[in-house]
Length: 333
Ligand code: ATP
Ligand code: MG
Ligand code: FE
Image 1 (cartoon, rainbow, N blue to C red):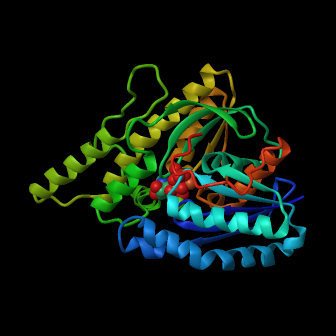
Image 2 (cartoon, rainbow, N blue to C red):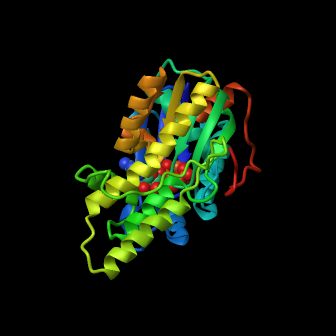
């Protein structure tokens, strides 16, 4: 069974081809990072135009790489939300046109379910239930995953997402876009105890997060150092800031798994690539008897294979879309 998955929710035009829901035959990602870097973030109009220019080539490349023809594709999956409306529309329109013209069944995929599904590609034996930790550019969620594409949010950010906070701080200190990987890299040379930033646990027993206060703390620190004409040690700042985000995320995820009696945490989303988050989860998980599963770097950020995988499991439940499928920018879990 061959599924073709299309992802265009943000700044990656991506197409993946997956066999029987679990085996990646191709995973082609055309990133727009080079253009958006000039603006310090994603410019929606430019993103849609770029998706439109590249999508056909990316599909061709994926088919070539997988060595399959369109005649062999049995299912098309496409991200229809959440994301930028113009960007999503390019993927949705392309998927509908292909499905219609070739008579192939179509499935609309929730991008966040896709992020979780990336783990089914990494771990061939993985099955729900488990606790999911999704940390990306727009989301920071702890979820109870009860079945394929079926989950309940236990905690979410009340303001900025973790990736968003990292991108903003990186921009202010001139590390560039996207900030997450740059902070991760700079932090490796720094001392994470150098600057004391508060950890925000919210202390209300919830699994929610808040990162905007921390972002303000960091920005205030930068301003006061600049005013005092002191040189800012970027690696120390990056390491201290990163630690105060990742420690809270790791603690809350472990505590959710413990209280729901689940011994597996499945990590997903762009920030799952963060090396310090991985370390903290490993060490805290080991102490608590919880296994940490995380996809390879390439499967952490937006890609088409994770969308194909998610689509495959929706197809198994008979959840098909028709030609009325539309982009849904604010789609929830
Ligand atoms: P969403 O999935 O919520 O719609 P998105 O698709 O833009 O948002 P992803 O592509 O999943 O988000 O992830 C991008 C985010 O991941 C960016 O904020 C980026 O800075 C962050 N990121 C990538 N690598 C790392 C890393 N090594 N450490 C921390 N953050 C990282
Ligand atoms: Mg992205
Ligand atoms: Fe994403």
